[in-house]
Amino acid sequence: MTSPADSFAERFGAARAVAAGDRVLVGGTLPVEEGVLLGEGDPYEQTRAAFAQALSALRAYGLGTDAVVRTRIHLVHERDLDEAARAHRELFAGVRPAATALVVAGLADTRALVEVELEAYRGS
Image (tube, rainbow, N blue to C red; front, side, top):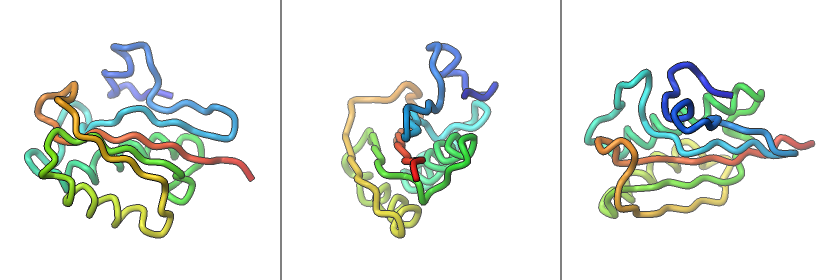
């Protein structure tokens, strides 16, 4: 499912989230809402905002934070790891999904410090 505001998905012919069997996969999600970068310059706020966008895509499948089994955080700067980890811990401490953090050379929106991905389980 894509939203009209999801220009990246439209541009690439992709979906924000896809159901695959008992999983829902949410692709790379930036902290951007209707073209506006949220939490500019703040890796903690950007991580929270990006996960909020990704979790919104899960809600289209009737899923929430408790269904998340894997997360990935892509960071432009290693120095932002602690702030991204703090935001992740606040959101997922009760779930404790498998998590990966990567430091990358850059993101599609050069203003962004963080991009996230989610995988959720929707089985019984």
